[in-house]
Length: 239
Image (cartoon, rainbow, N blue to C red; front, side, top):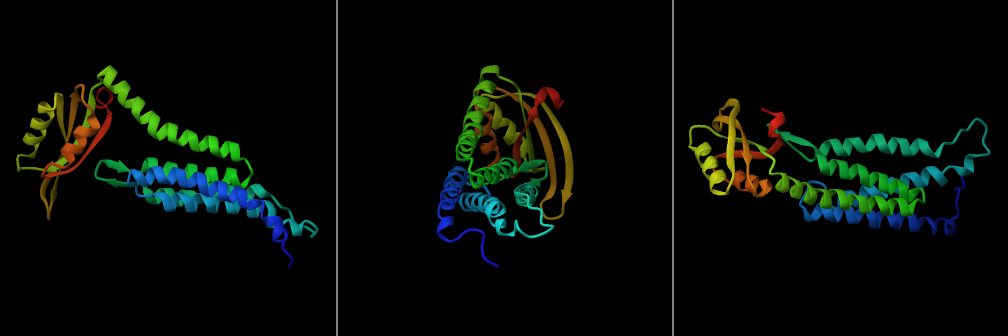
């Protein structure tokens, strides 16, 4: 079967494929710098692959138009990309006790697939705008949220898993108060017995202060005996 496009006619399509590689690499570079589970290579491959799928669906079967009972729909392949990318995104999300990780990275891979599809469709301006929107959301929104929380001094909910019976909770409270945070409430949510680690517990702390909650959580996570530490929802809706 002779191909739909001769070799030289495929050269202009390299512009769209190259745009997908560039834009998806920019998004992947941001994830790589933040040391996320899916970095530069994963995002670049997803974006280029999505673009190629769209290009194939647009130009790969046009030589079959003369065949009888053949119905072509370029959107069919694109639709399968949307559903198929969920397998990759799902593999990036994992839960450790009450802490969920990888949601933003999974959403980023989903966006990269959309950027690749837009490039493959020839919508380069729209793809570039989506790439800029990615940086606005993951960088700008994070800083905006931090500024709003600091301005409003909204109480923060922090969940900490630790080894019980080793004085870990006392050390946690000492660090919180010494860093300028006020403990408004404390509630033990879960207690387990682990054969390897002994007795463990998860405590929810409602804190209020002017500092950065992310820095406090990172410091608590490095404390000996702490298994995990994460910021929860706003305290008013959780207690």
